[in-house]
Length: 283
Length: 355
Image (cartoon, rainbow over all chains, first blue to last red; front, side, top):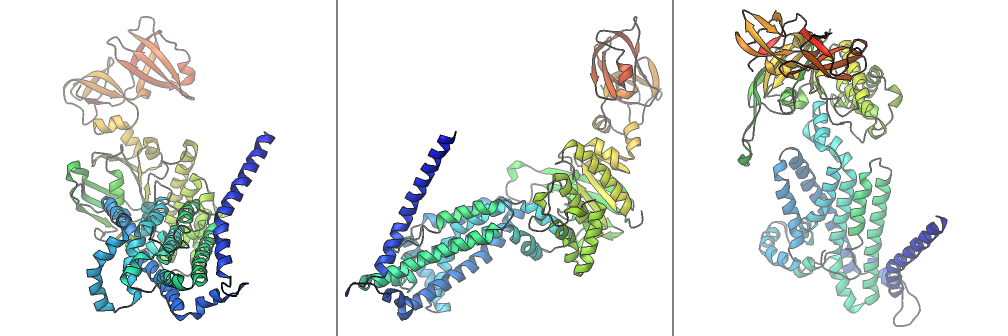
């Protein structure tokens, strides 16, 4: 009995070390490379200073963060009430909504860009040439991930009975959603938000092909001329993703409901995968 | 019975299946012209098999479902078009419905908060309600820390905290185990008598309905079959459905003529609703069947089932009909299988239906 548990411990320790190395070596390498002085040798923090000193890069970071915030807000405002309504009043439409939300996953980013060109003629006509208009595309892009996270949270509670109880106690629809439903799917909302941020911060193809200067586009651009700064920006994005995850874990940990950990798991899988150190396609 | 108010459901019909495109499932008539009047302060239980429309009736009264036709009025005020959150009705659901993110106390105070009552007022009222259901000690716990019975008691306190005009209980005991069910059933009745709120109690458990209600309404296929006091319902079922659904019944061949039924060699009154003449089947309750040891009797004992204080003795008549008789267990102990016996009936009225 004792021997097997010792063996199990060893095996578990070995796994931990292997996974640790697997994740840490690339991070360490990035940190190492981004602080190297390639010309004079030795160490320099110039690449990290460039993140705020290089105006184009700084602007791109601001744009990307704003895009993340706008995308999350718009996604939540559209998706949460819709999903609640579908579950309570039109359950027959659940399959259709789910299909629509998962659809962006099946369409290659290139196709989306080509298809959106016509739509964006109108968008830019009304809203101007701002990179922030990418919000609309990104809301569509994050739908599959956000839908999954919210769906898991809503399935974990008896949405119908809870909202009927709230209504019978005198709460109107808005109060029911705000005071009863949202607090009980809070972990799902958080993970939907964090996954969306991760997707937005990792998106390259659409922004690049549409000619907008987001963080990932800038990283690629700088990478052609200044390797360390590009890697520093990538590492910063990655660390930002980890901090988000940690924050999510801390915020949902104190909660009594067991569902938080399930939803957390879903986001833990998705978040580190997206802001990869090389700008890539959205999932 | 001080703050009771009258409730009237008039000619309620609820048809499902026409609103949406999936017509292949066909149309279901959950309610078919239900009329039910509840007196102020009264507890009426709606009893029936699943799918009989009893829950639909309650949900329409609560405003959580809409009637296809018919009206709902409470205290003479027409509520048919009033949304659920403006109806002032306290409801306890079959499924556990406490808000998981709030403590017991905040759950009970929720309805008062919705009514804009100040914090100290709603907390003291919530405390009073928790005392009424005996859960003051658990006021700072969350629903997940309570047992099923405790959760339903909190739900009852929460429903009563808003001083509802009507209390609606939708199978509140179905999810509980047998012992808790009986306890909570009696507690619900005690609390209801205490506050005097007009109450509609929906259940599929006849024992539950008979035990707590002032009057019991038996429903079948969206219609009210009979509405009567428990004892009356039990003794004088108006329709064969009621007779069969409430209590166990033996079906014994009988001859009816002139308002009298000849059952097991005895003449007993035929209840209204019986066939007027000719032969049929009499619905005889097990406790109305008498069994006497008699070596020359034409019936024989098949088996004896021990049920604690009482036992059920099954006898096979000469024509092969099996009849169950209930008696005290001490009396039943004198019988054993294949004993020759005489089987008769008590002189109570029976309902005779076509065979």
